[in-house]
Figure (cartoon, helix red, strand yellow):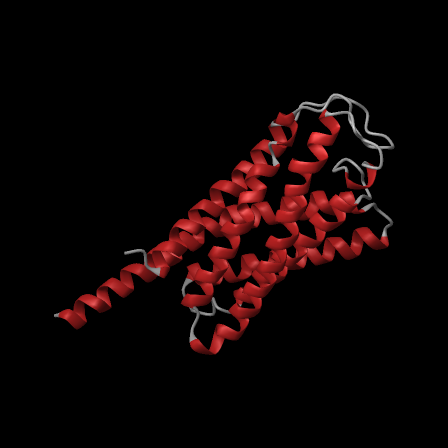
Length: 230
């Protein structure tokens, strides 16, 4: 039988794997050399250049499952915070899944078919386009979700403290960079790069830590069950 702790363990592991794949493919998976200028439509684009969005797309529902498992594990007096976190996670997943799905099923086929009229605003290479703006907003919602569930990890163990501070620091870096870059006049694409790098790092590390958290919770639950049976 799949318990909430076991589901949380595997969703944490999968979060780490998908976040690492997102990072690796984003760094090494693209090969375009064309100068990016208006209208921001690359004539030499290949389907492989959009491969980075597959792990990012799958990360969205996986993250929702992970936050739901944290909500289930939360103490009664902390469930309001984990519920808020789950709500933010659903907003993130809706924005990001829609954004990437449109890129993969509308934008990419249109470029490959040379049907690019009016496509500039939706291009992921447009530094102030809709794709970049919605993606940035989605990852801000992820930071809000992580900050909310940070309250769940109020225990005294080093593991819980590490998870809590990782989520808090990630939120501060994301919001702080948004404010600083906006005031400095940088385009939204710069913030997009910063927040993705920040969140992917947080997810890789926290996914590993959360797998340990859920494994420990599962062992504790099994131990209590054995005592009751005995």
